[in-house]
Length: 396
Image 1 (cartoon, rainbow, N blue to C red):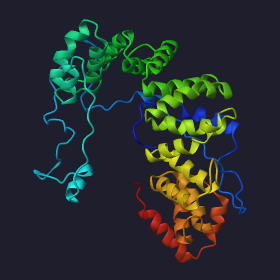
Image 2 (cartoon, helix red, strand yellow; image 1 turned 90 degrees about the horizontal axis):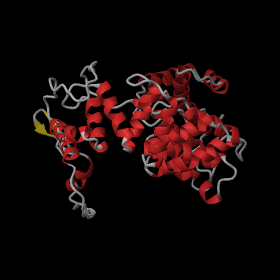
Image 3 (cartoon, rainbow, N blue to C red; image 1 turned 180 degrees about the vertical axis):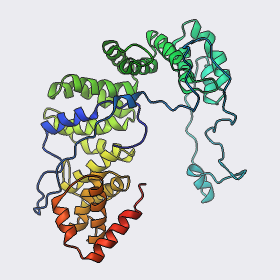
Image 4 (cartoon, rainbow, N blue to C red; image 1 turned 60 degrees about the vertical axis):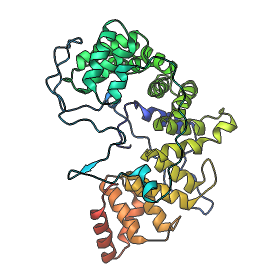
């Protein structure tokens, strides 16, 4: 599973079990040339507590839980880095990466698309928050929050939970998330549902958590949509659960949640009654999840391409995706990449490179008798070179 923080994951392993029970393995089928590339890897389980992780500073948590009193005694001395600021190296501005590469190439930047006119009243509290003026945001949000404004309550909860400009106060944040959730704020309903599931800052209440998660999902919160789909799959395993969850996976996937894109690809592939036009998009969703950096999707995309699953066979593209996943430390991808080097699928044959990837996957605990026989058949010098390459390997 990828290491990118993902507060919207819950129980992807349940989906995997359901999908694998309903569909033929993506990588267990025999190729036309008689080669078979392994068995379908299981989706690694996710700890539900990860879903509640928010980026936090190093300030200690307050035990008072006084939501109306924010400790401002500990603040960051350095101003936050804002979008567009030049990074400093040794006191001098470093060259910006990304969009400014066009300037270094002498190519003019494309015109900025026109923004849609905003006719409502500007939210000065959120404006201050976006500029990194956290105390100003608190000063402007707190009076509104006390008067029952859900948006201001959510903003206060976020500031307090992360300790931005004030002392970190998880109980106070939980209080304001709860108030905003009662007021119908989708983001607050999602966050408060996670708190209710965890049961640390507020009493655990699964029924209430599910209600808030469903309401947040129906209100359009992408993370809630994915998590509610996961809850439906866990609560009703099999075709019924996957069918009920599919619309929520679709909505979350359209909003860019890579986990949902991966799940949707699996659901489209697994369910028999999915319309053909949706089944035809299974690879598209898997590709989008892979491009988002989800290493499990990169693994599956590579295996789908190698085995010609859900579309035409493409050894070279499959090799590229498996190489990316393997370089990121995906153990199954490392194992499968060794097979590609041995059989010259999508790449030139390279026994030493194959042995390197086998050594790495074996060290991680993945046994493969076929690769072990291959490795033992190498010369002592080849084994030494493979081990040396494995020792020098660093995850990207």
